[in-house]
Image (tube, rainbow, N blue to C red):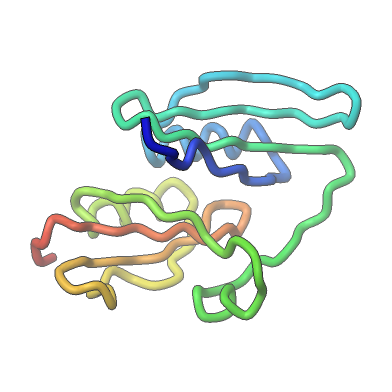
Length: 140
């Protein structure tokens, strides 16, 4: 098997709320709940039951918010991870559904710089940037 990305870790302030939101938003289910007592770290590993991609949510008491860029252009002014991206079917409907789940609109659905792809950005309820990509080639 070739090397592949196993998961992305996202540090959050409210572990339960983040797990609920990402599960509702993208269909994840909880794969693992763990604690690393040596550093007081709580972990919820989410997995998508169809695609197998995983999102690790992490919380440690006493953590402080890091960069909360308000848009993608601002996010790329700081080195490190700036956003997480999801392929979606039906960009407009997904965008509207995420807003109804408490996301904030950042970039409304529009053509992506990548030909034939549509994109949008939202901020999750904690302010983390989430890109949505629709590669179906369809129009709105």
